Amino acid sequence: MNLLAPPPPVVEDEDCARRPERVGSIGKGLMVIKALAEARQGMTLSEVAEATGTTRASARRYLLTLIALGYAENIQKRFELTPLVMELSGPRFDTGLTWQIARPRMEKLVREIGESCTAAIRDVDEVVCTAHVEADRRLAFRLPVGARLPLITTALGRAILSDISDDCVREVVALAPPARHTHFSITDPELLVEEVRKVRETGYSIVDQELELGLRSIAVPVRNARGRVFAALNISTDSARVELRAMVEDYLAPLTEAASAISRLNRTA
Image (tube, rainbow, N blue to C red; front, side):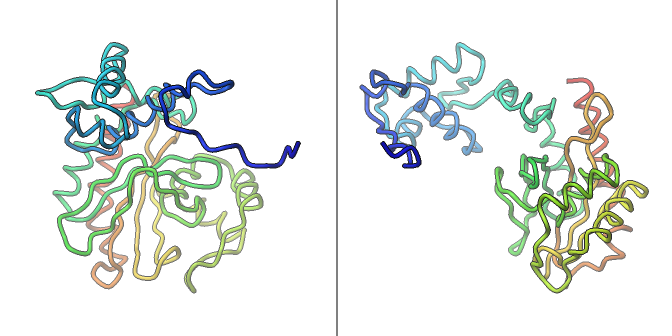
């Protein structure tokens, strides 16, 4: 028996649950949750069935179960996830808040400054996008929820790392040495520690074209109920259109205000 062989693919059929060491209904239920999570305006029963490859009857059973448990709701024949679903990842990521509740603050920020806004949390040596509001412009920066970026190379990551000591930052860099994505990328470990130290002192991080040419970002920390940094809020823009000076003069104050509002939501949630 080859212990290194990959596991057999999951077969999505009705008797999957009867096979040893598999529970097909869990897989189907997660497919329904994923489909609803990706739908901004909710989904009809038929849309859920089509998206998950199940019959309408099966989709209805999964949806009714999620509603009974409080994870979904039916609004005018469209099914949507409730904020309770965020608690499923709360212990893993220590977010302590619902990004759906924080989203209106991000939307207000985007309307005010006309640039895209992203929220992210840390997962080991990466940041994971938990919410994104896109600006109403053709070349707006787009980052889908769930997207992953290098921790130390991004403004989001450095804002999150600002809550730990210099020695801890050195450990992060040692475990995941940064790649040189552009000629602007900082790869020297001590310079990266210094960049995070600046964030700790100033309260914000700016990364100028280190991850991608033409991409300029500013980020600030978001704190949990204990006052610890657990996430970051970010504005990204085109370096050819917005100068570095304007990132601080025009964007920092409203960005900090939005992050503070989200932090307050977290304390009262």
